[in-house]
Length: 307
Image (tube, rainbow, N blue to C red; front, top):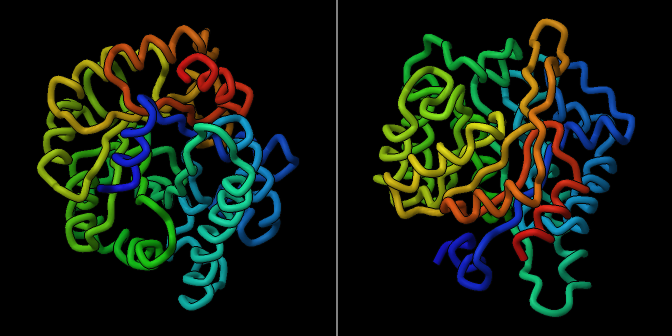
């Protein structure tokens, strides 16, 4: 059985972590950079240890690596060789795995051993132009496969428990991820950025991309992330009607990303995390956490509400 299935056999819902970049900024990291959180891998890796520790202590059953924006093209542009890039990605997993192992050695009672998710950001994350919230790349599935394959190959050989394809905005990228999961044989989840309560960012119905994922045996969960919390309940219902796979939901604060100014704008959606977490679990979510602007204290509230 895959690691997610094993954990969900022991407890009814899995608690995910929150916003990596949000917490790094709280620790004083400057992420105004095309590499975003991956910049910290180069400049302050100990900050990543601290963030992983904070989320584990808050109650997360799964912690993601700082590889969302760590693409080969992006790091080559920073002057790194391919060998150096591979080493950096391996370090990203090692940092989180070591903190997980350290934390797990102190766990008592019924707390499950947390998982490590190797984060895969979309093509739009490398473009750094906000297109992960639109999905309008104009790039074919085969080209997206080729873009993601080198990073995938490195991360698939690490001790990460699962490959986490996050903020997926378009049909073509979904197809590329499913092919990568099939070729590598690694347990994978695919999580979608949704623009409303029915469709993903490029306008494809959520039901269509969930059905594609459900047809790939190595995709072991689907999800909704970096999406306004007010859409989540309806999206869970659509996904649950389409598949029996675990459904992970980790929305953002409801604010919108301004790619030009590299800031979050607008008004956060008022979110009672206790009430929402219970609502989402009752609707069929198997995992609940948060994305951008969601903090360790929010994750602690979610855990307290569900476990």
